[in-house]
Length: 339
Image 1: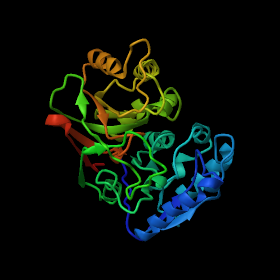
Image 2: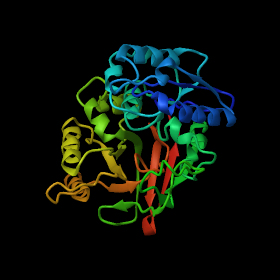
Image 3: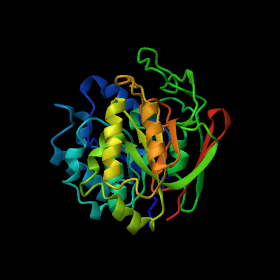
Image 4: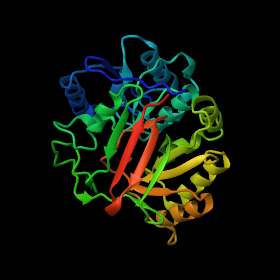
């Protein structure tokens, strides 16, 4: 069965950096993220790893693992939100004792998604793919980002409904800060390969494909055992977002996951928007999606609100989900916290 944590006002959020920490020049920005979280009614405790960054990581792997393990097992911290992702979270996994971790939300995306997926697969504790802490530093939230709090506050058996965004951000404007952090200027439209309105259901699982593909074949990517042990062989509805892979790299990654059995009992696959859609000899992401649709004979969604092109929905690994693609590229996502 899946265990769903619950966020409540007054609880303590632990901030640790199992991947990248915050370099000194950005400490003020990060402090603002913590202050905003406190104003919203939460206590914030920052670990030592947060304030450091050297050679693509906040600290040596054992040190990062020790701090994360403490926050996941101590009674003084209720949930964890890393500052952001990074590059080398994979180094940490082998040094963690998942069996002793308490039921707490971990929220984040990008490199953090390796931790999110591994924790849910190994323990059945639901995890949250959504905004990083630094994404939550705005005075206000856009409607899509704002759902992180309502989603994580839901009780067991609750159904949470999220709607596709109306606009998304094409590029960062760091020299022109907004109240919402993001600059949402482009009209959002979700798509399916065959451009048909449809509804797909399944247990949500996924993350940043650049990162989680490396879990396949390791003790931290055992999808078959997870399906049998925790969700009673229900189908999985996968979501992937892509940070830096070209179309050919995405295809190689999907072939690897298919051969590892990740798609053996799968109801559909959803892909987030990507800012790096560079064709390889004319081979595009859309070609990848069309080939995958023909090969697996399952629905394929793309350009969903997920990943490095904000805003993004808060997607719960382990939740029972129903995705409805409606006319004009609009979509509705319902997530039920069913054990």
